[in-house]
Length: 181
Image (cartoon, rainbow, N blue to C red; front, side):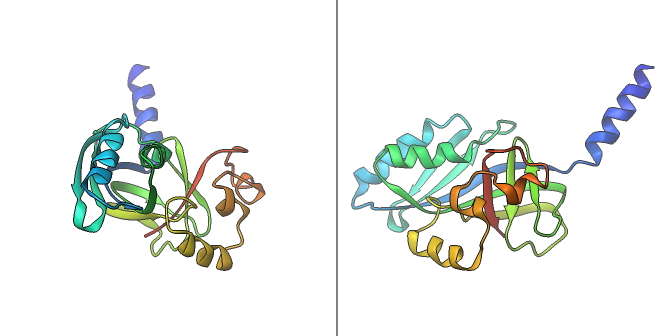
């Protein structure tokens, strides 16, 4: 009996793609000196999923490595940068993917978070891939206005599941991240 339960559990997991974000590149805006960079660096290091942060002062960017097996709260990165007094200009998440299916124009649940792939160029993600978060407050206002003019999804404006998401089984008011590859 235990053997059958184990086989059933493994079969269920095999059909569900897996993903683990392992690093990110975050570009901040509003920095004027090394002290600004240091403030963001310290704030990012307090995020529970962050293992290490390396600053690139010349480009106002931060290379972040995540702890293995720890669920990443993407909004916690934004909050850390904002709490330090700055804003995000771009956030690129790199992860290892294993058989993550990308149905055209639909949402994908990775861990406990929902993602809408805005320009999926493939049907299945495997190996290392980098996703750029396109939500408001993760890109510049100019970039967000340009995307908003072409994408009419209500959830893009708020980052929260709306009628366009709920028909796909995304719970009402769930956080939805819009990403491009």
